[in-house]
Image (tube, rainbow, N blue to C red; front, side):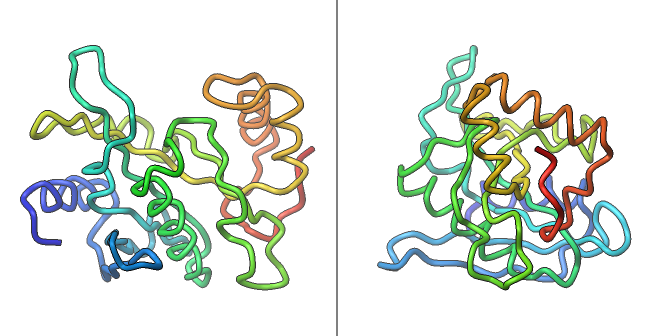
Length: 199
């Protein structure tokens, strides 16, 4: 993490998530791409940890703002503090975006990014959504012609992914909206990767 851009993202995230206790750099399989992932303990509350990418927004995500600036994306994931595998899953998603394999938008599902980390994981997929746990704190950062936005990766189950696909997948899809509404109305603990499916 050496560029002024990455440092600006780092400061912005620390101001909202709390002081980072660790930053680990993850590499693609061919080591051509790197993504730093930072850990904020007890964030947004005691017993939970939040991991955040630093500098993913430097990579082209294929989106442009109304002002003509490129829209860059940084990712967050939150879970039980003992679930350190969330950092690896987050890095997996980030490296897929950086390589051009996926476009990051609300409602997009990253299949299997949390799979294989233990027998108790019932939510192996990652759904991108707005970081609602922080209300409007992540309202965006503009720097060097890039409008940086943050998205939360929510672990979801096989049945929940099927529900999204059946009822309307993708950005502004009805399936995604219905699933998020269910999470909120049923007060679902989305930070529990071993939870039961809500559909």
